[in-house]
Image (tube, rainbow, N blue to C red; front, side, top):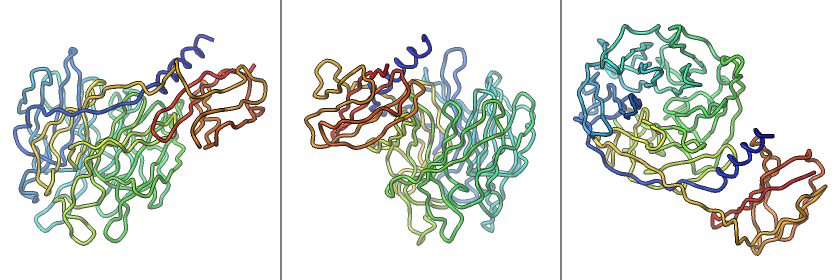
Length: 430
């Protein structure tokens, strides 16, 4: 019963608030950089942000470099670190930190003739000593522009991405403790799942990745949200499903993270492009979309209302739990930027728990409820204590709904209006 009550209050807390985002400029990184691998680390209670490699303002193969930097967030100062230990310069790598070691994985090299070489490298950086260790075991399949995310602070997942000349379905899982690679259930071998330039995160036992480019003429942008349920008893066993979301919501090279039990996709563009910011379709310069997308798995709802001055061409984000920090990227006009941008959230209540225009009765109920409200139409959702949606429909006012199919127990009801105001009620079925 205690677990049920805790879950109930967690659900109510989630339903009772939403995030408004604010931005603040921090000290710029010492040089403009884009397509750099970025991650955050909290060490000794202090937050730090790391940037590895990337491309300078020339936006040419000669401007791709291995330079690395660290930001002390508390002092707002940048420090130059040793270069990535690689004879090849790379972009489109990913960076993840486990137990104060950052793993910079994959990426690709651009040759003078324009050819691109995907790399299997796993560079290891010790944040305590600000030094690189011996490289880890290389990727079984060289990959760049992939989805990279951490599961349970112990495994790093490398999902799909580009390898030499095509998108791949591979799911490669790195164990830092063993310095070995595991092979996960691949994504389905089709162009809805296979992607480069997508991004994603893991929330609890589900991996989500969104957007990117599919392999076809001019590399069309993708609008699919892919979900992979990870078997907690066997982390290589993944069950894949897909959602196609609204036709106008797309994204490419966005930063992705989790925040307040939601998934965020930050910045990026609405068109696919080469590393120089010129679109694959028609060789047209691409601009940032200046957007934060948030997705609530509990509600299965997207919020696209956050519009902020955010760049494109990201390969990671620092997340301290209370603040998000982006480094570099491309601004308008495909300008490679030195911008360090802090994004913070103010959580605001959107539930009126004392004066509500909504009536739900009888409650407790044996087999039905009547929902009454002043609006012509509204949205009703019923959620069980496991966080599962058991009903989701749009209804007119004063509607009677049968609940005979629901097991006895406690549920959370959510009534949602077009003006984004909504109300919650505890519903009991004896």
